[in-house]
Image 1: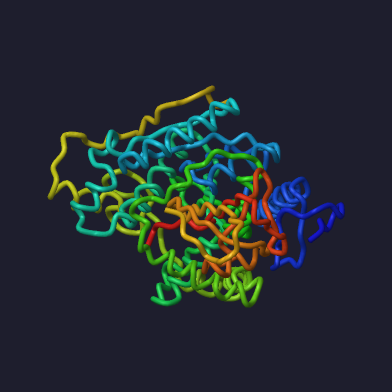
Image 2: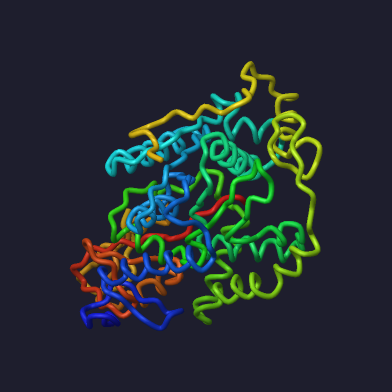
Length: 321
Length: 78
């Protein structure tokens, strides 16, 4: 296979685009695609203060790298989830990446801030770890962004993540979740920071190819709690379809965003208020995050009480405005 | 312990990170796409590397090669 641009031996073949690229032209292609997505979906401009949620995995580190190369100056936010050696290594990879590029990074330790890490939280809630983990990450990223003056939060969700989430929501007819599934969630409340997913049109294979070619040192291990997760089953099923019908994942997600989501979003308009407890945006009286911790702390009491503001630890150079 | 997949004399070393590391020995030259098919791995979710190079599905692998198969998929939120 030859590179479509230069005719040299190709490194990456993109069946859904019916093309192939050498390493140099693939990296160029990937970055151009992300820039197009940012512009087409009006995610942010160079004037925005961008907070990138960074786990230490290939997607978030790739996103951070691409944004830097495109001329943005995002700050990283890493949340240590308290999942033993996996979380320690994730933080170490994130810090090493930031240090090697002279980037500013904020770190929040879930256990230090709230008294419980993800495993203890799951035990207290008697639920799968992923539900408390996802809610905690969304809440903390919004709060840190808000309290530190960031105008947008960027996450590393890719096309496979979006297609798998969509399939799961469709299989269970989660219409409220479908109405909120979007690569751009505008800040429709003063205490809500805009959230964007610049990699949502890049497949997981395309992202890992970028990370490998750029020699990004990401954590290759899977989260120990991801084993058996339904999202992996959905991704596998979607990749079987993709194998026989290239472009299916993008058609599914793009078609949904174009045709179905606008109708659902119109029907699902909810009034967003502020949580009586923490002041964060919610459609209820008390937000889902506070309710979750109330439930957990009834079963496992801890001495740490959440403070009025989160104080993330700063690593590396301070954020330049 | 390496597991043989064929009968020829030469062996190709295949390191699979899925994400758990596993090593196999494969006999005979074949294309990347054929290797993945024999291993039961979907080419839509796996990348094959030889040295510093990423390989396309039509690339020939030789008996003396050492290749790495990396899973692209990560999960959670399930």
